[in-house]
Image (tube, rainbow, N blue to C red; front, side):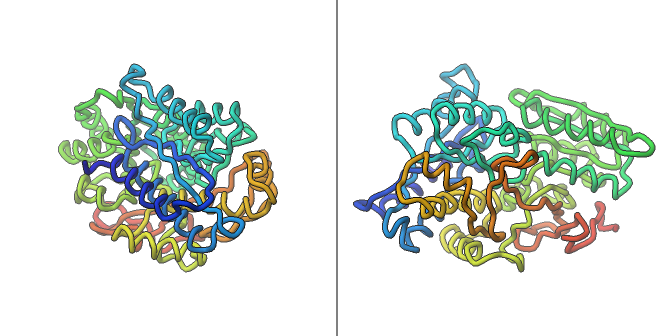
Length: 411
């Protein structure tokens, strides 16, 4: 069956087969690979991890020959049995990896609605965990075993609000899913917009039920009547595109500037197929990562070349981030004479690691505890069909490659 789950499992199995008979460390991946979660994100995470395992194998392994074995669990696998709740399913998937499979480390929580539960479980069991999502406080809670190299909403939202202020956008409409991500993001945006100096912004906000909604046209008509300077689409999987499609139906798009609070437009083949021309001029936060970025380090260039060779497309930063986390685990283990969860934890805290953007380390700081995020930039599609290889960076000015364009191409 050609599904994200089947493809991810086959990908991991093929990668593990290359090291059959060799000594291995086990790394668990707990990620959504079916609905109601975001299986595209999960599949991209597995892709990045498998390429990392190949990179480690082709560069001699860990301690001259120890290889990486990947164990993949779909964190949506028991959602239906658990009464439709993701946290029970995700914690169960993680616990199986940690306690039955005895993985050395794990990675992958994607959805905010269960990330804290998985992180708490990692703390109780004592398993180093790399988080692959934008939860604003999951590392700030100063957990001993939780790490992150991804940007969080704590870095993204201030950049979005700064951009809005720089464009003198006064009337803002927010349409948000009632998920942990949707509420958290919309609340942070609303609070920081209201805190901007000068004349208060006019903010219009509607929330909707993520699991049941099929028709958002009543809210979108009200947003159109409000005539906002900016429309913020805080939909998640499924509803993000429902919003674009129905906004076009009611005439809100393509004429209204639109923003998304995470980097789902970088899944460009899906984006243009599902959003169409109405998705042009969308702005969203991302990292600096691009296959064509001049600052890309050798390990990043290797990853881009191998990803394109294997999958026939350029990688989005979700895959790059998973690759980065697995290669960091391997580098950390090279710093200690014995391999265990405790020694890995020690090495992660004291080591410095090569990544696509240069060397990083994990400080125990107030702002960034076990969290080393890349700079946040705002990207914008300015022509139908663009992808990560040529998407413009429009903000902040020090990273800008193109000026921001309003719908229709006006500066």
